[in-house]
Length: 82
Ligand SMILES: [Zn+2]
Image 1 (tube, rainbow, N blue to C red):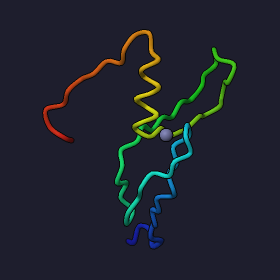
Image 2: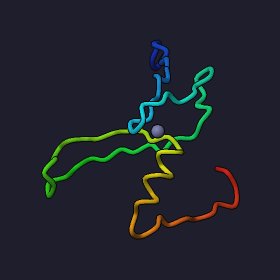
Image 3: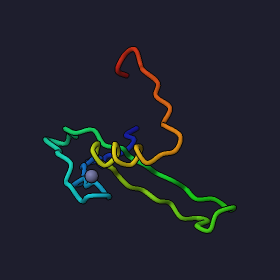
């Protein structure tokens, strides 16, 4: 029995840094620049209950952002790239 005839075309849409508006390089569907991707589902005890927020931050904006933190980010070094 055939499962599903329709092919799923996964197309990476243009990615932009939400902070500075810079377009993130994508070549042949591969993201050529690393970005901070955030997805947050706000819950019941927030003022944004049921809202899902998504955004991307380029590396330089990310560096700027974390420099403003009172408590630095936790940095874990991976031994291998997964
Ligand atoms: Zn940026």
